[in-house]
Image 1: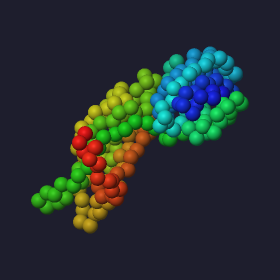
Image 2: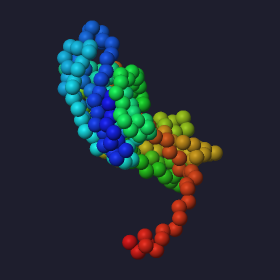
Image 3: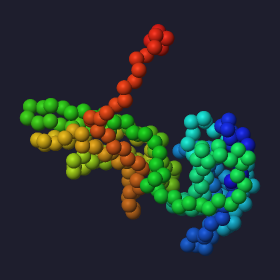
Length: 240
């Protein structure tokens, strides 16, 4: 990867070179995608049946000041099933900034763990309801957005799994979307002595009819926690 000298102002001009081992068929159909954090910003052409692809493509990227990583993923295109991820190179903002003259060398691809390749956000509502003879921990799974695509269609079939105090509940499956809207209320009965400080874990999965479900991400939340105190707004901010 060769990075241009202007990366300090959020601009990168780059070239990418890579070599890798063949798949089971003895060959690959490689292409490369470029991501700024979790957003795909460029995709090369596919080089068919080649283990030493040459793309010869150049991109000028205007990086946001708050970005964290610039990543290059190499995939093997499959016209029938999933495209296989061959590997990736991830360059941190600090690494790029420490090379103002750019990078011009071969870089080893690293293994991609799909359980770490997550993206997106989920909206939750948590509260404890006092009823006549019991307390109930209510978790409303509202929606999620910008989930990672796990199916060949470029979407997923997401559902949420909620784990709390040894109990597990699940939402419905929403087919073919990366922006599921559930608006489902899941209730956990609080037994005597149960602590609401126990973390509630929400996992999001892509449902598959054949094979195992694909992990899309997780979040852990509690009803009670410490929050940092913020200063009182100034008069100018208040007036605005």
